Image (cartoon, rainbow, N blue to C red; front, side, top):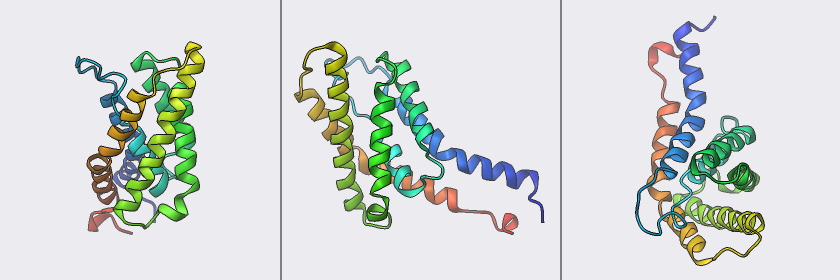
Length: 176
């Protein structure tokens, strides 16, 4: 039985959800809030969906998609191109490599994993920026950035869980 046009469209949209949701958080992460000293401590919002989808749906959140979202982040934030692509790729790889351990575990285990991924991402970001600017960047704002990213995981991760559940729902009339 050939799937109808609506079924194919539905499958295509469902498979685009991880990339689109991550892109939305990448865009939200670079919105200027005009708060004093918020720039260096602003959370890496796109890192949370990248981590979530790398653990739960790596078939839909791929290395190339994480790389592309990093390029978009760099272009919009005015960062040197490739910095966040590298950060997102390595964080994706770290989450993906621990997928067997993390998948199916409770929320607090995922949250602990996010703390480690945020520390890795922010540490790598610090290293790349220090090399790029040929001087050691201050560590304190980046430590707070990692903690703020981790602190937002329950909110953003909870949203990813709800989005994932909606992706799994299929209307009865479309089931084969």
